[in-house]
Length: 222
Image (cartoon, rainbow, N blue to C red):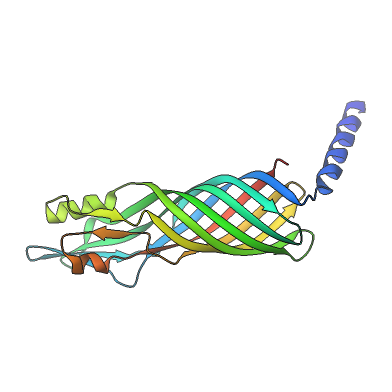
């Protein structure tokens, strides 16, 4: 019983100290998940001889990891830059001669370095609203779109372009002492996927943007 009371007192003191934590500068780590998609205004049609081969957007979202560090300057009004490793992706339905390909769909996944800079306002002690620009550098991709191009065209002529894309994030946050929960929407101003293809008209059809919903849990180290 004595040990239980000591542990309870320590937990109460720790909670009180955390609840009072409200500095003008924070640095911390965060991690969570992305639900992302890739889409555009046009589907892509390739032709190998007389056989049409179509990529069509798929509404299903891909689940990916996001994590990194954040800095927050200010209280009621603040600026919050972040450096994040972010997994994003999407799916395309694949059709040959108007019939869905045996593979059914192509999954596309990217690993990105994201740098959002959020401008926010704290509406209440625990509640925040923020929005800001973001730059996203693609570090790697799984190459499945390129592989599908090669199967149909018989040559290695499809390459990803636009490694650097610009977008925005907007959302809400909740602070509980050193802990924080953020839920955001992310969109792009520029295409994240463009394909360098022999046929310029075909390549121009395949400009795609990304969007995602993101949820992260953060911890302020100081």
